[in-house]
Length: 578
Image (cartoon, rainbow, N blue to C red; front, side, top):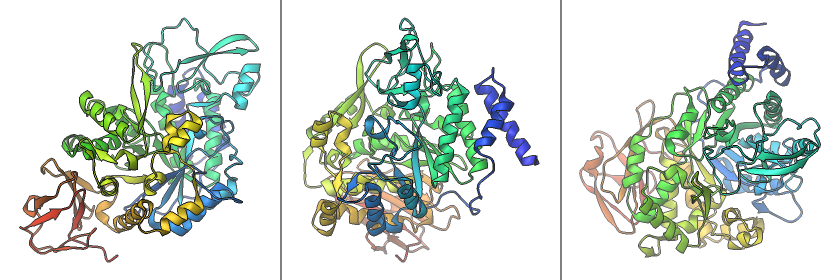
């Protein structure tokens, strides 16, 4: 045994002793080595990410075409329309499922045949850094594990959490309004099982180390298929301890640290990202001491950008940004403003007042948006997320409708892609997809409003029509993504400093890690024209300054710059040639 392996075994044993104090940790370590017998080839030296990194988020069947698998159609779209503008693709759950559009997994080791097969997944992974979901908190009620639980058979007989109906569970933090427990008939009589999200999504019991080992087998399969980014779905709820909130418990964090140790050694270059749709302070804990997630979702960004553009003020966005710490060394943020789940409101708690949230909700309601609630410990319900396409959420402002929907929307995406971290674009944002009310009516689920399936031939027609909103948004966003990818100051870990401008502006300064390039990112958040004194930016007099987006050269560094409604500038001293 090498010294490196001996150190690794000791680290794994320390993790496991904390999680499972009554188990033989040395035996568990040996079983982990059976799953991961040897390290994969390490990646080339250098950072795990750069300014060239950005992500597309999509379901495997968002784009459809007669006669071919949806994953093949997605591959065509990526090759022909996106190319190397982005580096990574997040294909949302692609396994057989029973509900929640993939997040109620029946079999983690299979590809949903309605999407394609493992070859389709690996083909996309050959050209892009592939992100996949590890739905780690729960499994489908139709899964083999749960069916075996009902019958008292293994594997599965002891994979789930049973609770006495009389237990006091009022402290448990809930993301849903449905009852927490589901009573089922088993071979051993009636039992109540734990269901954080829905009664078709049964929480697995990580107190049983065999459950952990099952998920390590799944991770190994994903790595073999070319997955390089593993998204730990709903990870915050993993460990349950009656009498506590059952969220963010120390055992949960230790499981994340264990997974980090495993992938860093056996699959170097693999990125763990935690999905924790919670208030900002709680979310930040998943960096740990640079030993948990490599990347966390920047959940507060979405509601704050939306509020800023609907209210026409950077007040709260700026306050939040000033309080955000830089990501630790070896870590970064994943920035996004829209996703398959809608826009979470919990991350806005403590950042927006109740009145401001209510005003934002009413504006989105006028634009056709819907809302999902969660149940509080006192039995009341509160809005958990806004269900809407982001394009339609920005159809009007708190002051009413106007003609700036496309400009306002492009502004939202430009702000997002300018910030410290890696930008992630939901495919329906890239395509300016409106609310899908027909989908909601068909499924009965509010989240379907932003999960539309699109016929690929129809999409091709829209993208070829330069006057369509789809073409205008897609063309301009891809252009800006490409510009961004050439700027060292947009490295995910490059310096970021908030500018103190009037509230209708949102501005910040990025500087490359070698200090050679600066970019001043300033956006007009309002439907009015405004003028900015360039002296407020402190442009170095000996440098030549350009706006990367418009190509305009700024000759008078003490002059002014006029902003159209929702215009963004990237003022730099080192312009790209592209």
